[in-house]
Each structure stands twice: as structure tokens, then as C-alpha cells.
Amino acid sequence: MACNAIRTGERYLESALEHVDCQAQSIGSFGYMALSEPGSTLSVALTAVLVIFVALFGLRIALGYPIFGHDLASHALRLVIVLTLATSWPAFKAIAYDVVVSGPAEIVQTVGGSAELPGSDGSLASRLQNVDEGLALMNKRGAGRRGVQQGDWFQLGFTRSAFLTGTLGPLSLVRLTGGILLALAPLVAGLLLFGFTRSIFTGWAKGLVAVFLATILVSLLLSVQLALMEPWLQGVIQLRAADQPTLSAPTEGLTMTLAFALMCFGAIAFAAWIAFNSSLSARLFARNSTEAPQGRREVLSYQTVSTSTREDRLLHGPAVAASVARTIERDQRFGRDPSVALLEQAPGQRSAAPAQQATQVIQRPQPLGSTHRSSGMSSSRSRTNRDEAR
Image (tube, rainbow, N blue to C red; front, top):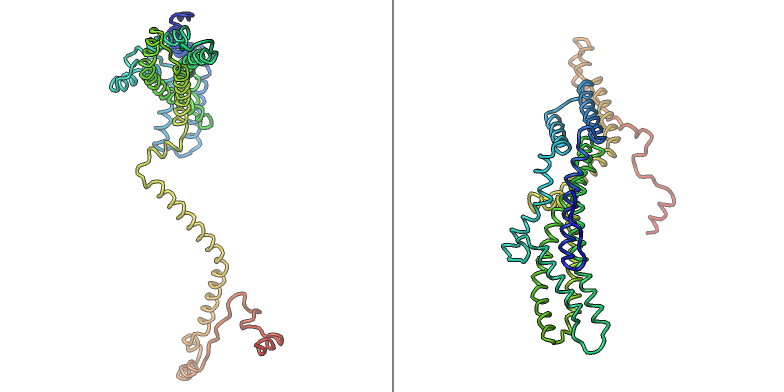
């Protein structure tokens, strides 16, 4: 697709913006069609990837791995997404291309129209061109200072350069980036099938979201810049037409253009940070404000459970020893049970068994591991002398 050439001098900015927009749309549409064309190298590679994916899933079933309902739904959904993004241009155009290319303009038109921002009705490029022509006229007439003042001419020239950079740079960045990402859809779609490549597909999708948000932010900022600079520039030109000096105009114009240029590039960085910051999205979509404290409580409870588990492991050895000691004691008691002794005695001697039972003393066995251990506190001569000295 041939785009219009950029014209120097008159209508430079408007023609440059139209050319960049045309190139972005051409890259996004024709690049996608070239990559997804049947018989192309990428199409053959995508077919091989799909065959491998289905074969691996069939191998899992053949080896007897458990397959649940959510596994089947997840695999089917991924196959549908890949085939939609990589092989069907009408579906891709409705789902992604029109959203990224035309969606921001519709949102800016709705928001800017309600706020009565200039350029929100689709005339943003032409009104930016009018401002550029006004800045060029200021460079021609100067600030009206007596004598030769190199500072005024430098500031006026730098004002227009900053305006062109802050306008053409951000818009070209977001539009061309969006077009390139859209063209790479058939290449990236197959990476959704496998876990070790899924992060690349996720990054590609986040990049499209960042482009979408950045286009909206930059367009709204440029509309605000128009609302600020158009009446100011009109007043400066009228004063210079009446041959009145505008000594503060160079500094004021340079300040406004530099400020909005920095804000536009900062808006692009902010949109990318929002799209790629997963922890921020988790906090924004939290169910309630107590979710994070609840998570901290769960961590604390997990740490408590882990600590108690370690303590239980430390006490496990003495507990086993005590259990063995109780078992030995129970066996000894069973061996000395009076009822067993009565059964072994003669019938005439059974009457004396209760008396013997009363006088019999059953010694408690020592715990396991304490046979050669001192049960009392040891004493020595030096300790006795020290206690007497106190």
C-alpha cells in the first residue's frame, strides 16, 4: 500500500502524521496476511506445532495420566484462540485489529467531546498543523525585542522543534508499535500452546494493551495542549501583527512545548507499566480491601504451623521413648497380674493370694534411656564448701 509522501514547509506535520498512520495500518494488515498465508513458512511451522500439541495430549491419555474436565476445556480453548489469531483475518480484524487501530479514536472522541477538548472530533492532526504554522510565523516575526537578541531566536526555534518532537514522536511510537505487534500475531499465536513459551504470548498481549492505553493518553494530552496553546498563540500573533513586543512569548512557548513533550513520553511509560505490572493488576482486582491483610495472616499462620511442626519433630524422640516405656510397664504388669497367679496356684492356696497381693509392691520400671543416668543432683566437696561459705 503506497502512502502519501511527506511535504516540506506547508502542512508538514499533518502529512507526517498521515504517513505514519498509513504505514502502521499497512504493516498491521498486510504483514498479518503475508505471515498467515497458506503455504508460507510460518503456516507450515504452525501446522507442525499444532500436530505436536495434539500428539502430546494423546500421549498423556495413552499413558494413563488422569485427564480432568478443566484440562479438556483449557486445551480446546487454546486451540480455538490459536486458530482464530493465526488463520482467520476477519476474526482477527474484529477482535484485535479494529480495537487497537480504531478503538482509541472512538474513546478519545467520546471523552474529549464530553469535555469539549479541541481536536476530539477527528480534527486533531489538522489543528496540530495550525499550531505548527503559528509557531513558524512566530519564528519569522520574532519577539519584537530591540536590537539583535540571539536568545529569542534560539528559544523560538527550539519551541517549534520541541512541539514537533512531542507531537510526532509519541504518536509515531504508539502507532508503529501497534502495527508491528498486530503483524506478528500469526507468529506469536502458536506460543500459547506450550507452558515454556506462554510467557512470550502473554507479553505480546500486554504490549497490545499498553499500545491501546498509550494511544488514548497521548491523544488526550495533545488535545489539552491544543486547548492551552491555540488561544495563547493567537494572542501572540495578534500582538506581533500590531508591532507590539512579546518578550515573554519565547520562554512561555518553550516551557509549554517541553512540558507536554515530556508528559506524552511519560504517559507511554505509564501505560506500559500498568500493562506489564502483574502485581498492580492483582491489587486492583482484589475482591475487597482486606484481601492483602488476610494474605499476610495466612502467611503468619503458615509460619506458625511450620514452627509447631518443627517443634513436634524435636519432641518426637522423647515421645517415642516414653511410649516404649509405657509398653514395657504394661507388659510387666500383665506378667504380675494376681489373677494370673491365682490361676497357677492350687485351689486351696487361692485364699492367701489377696493377702500376698496387698503386700506385693510393683516397682515402676525406669524410662528408656535413663538406666545409667543420675536421677538426683550431684554434689561435690567444692560445691558443699561454697554453699557453707554463703
